[in-house]
Amino acid sequence: MPKRHERSERTLRRSAPIFAALGDQTRLALIARLGGGSPLSISRLTQGLALTRQAITKHLRVLENAGLVRGVRHGRESHFELEPEALDDARSALESISRQWDDALARLKSFVER
Amino acid sequence: MSRSSTDRIEKRIELAAPVARVWRALTDHKEFSQWFRVNLEGPFVPGKITRGRITYPGYEHLVMEVVVQKMESERLFSFNWHPYAVDSKADYSKEPPTLVEFRLQKTPTGTLLVVSESGFDSIPLARRAEAFRMNDGGWTEQVKNIEAHVAKAP
Image (cartoon, rainbow over the protein chains, first blue to last red):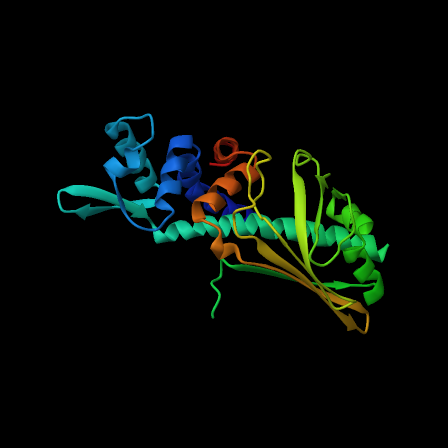
């Protein structure tokens, strides 16, 4: 029991910056734009968002520090792309669906066995 | 075609009930509603849509909608639906659905049920991250939980 507790605590601590980074509408919007897969310039990412280039850059740095995106040099411009490891988030999402199935099947079990 | 680890979920469960009983619990929409916690309005018919309001506490604002694919008596029941459909205002109909399959097999003690859900990789990553955030009652909320947790046991 204590072991499991320690482990889940470690996982939580490691995930905290990711949760924090994504807990913001602008940053989610940026992730959504990068979801297409190809690297985009800061100007491209700023288009249509009611924020300055500097503000967007700041948000991108938060995402970068959380390991969700990475900057790539493209001539004189900085481009950003999704960090492949952001897939871990997809796994987390899958885990939450997986847990919902576990719950549903446990309910089915008691339903048919009663 | 090989599937990535993020494309598919599979669950196996042994049920101490005859195959016929499990089949009914899965395919009779009223029985399905009871254990799944939804209020399906109509029966499952291959090729047809069945929908109903979720009755699971905290998710009552959501409507679940499935398109039945196969109903091979006491063997296979499958449907398509939209996973992560957690925003009641969003239109998910243009997104690719996932496929849910229930496979039943008779065992000496009852029924082996194998449930799989596949097709997650076709759903944009950003949507999954966003849905996960909403699914868990908001990541902002989650961060607070994490902070409280870590503060309690540093």
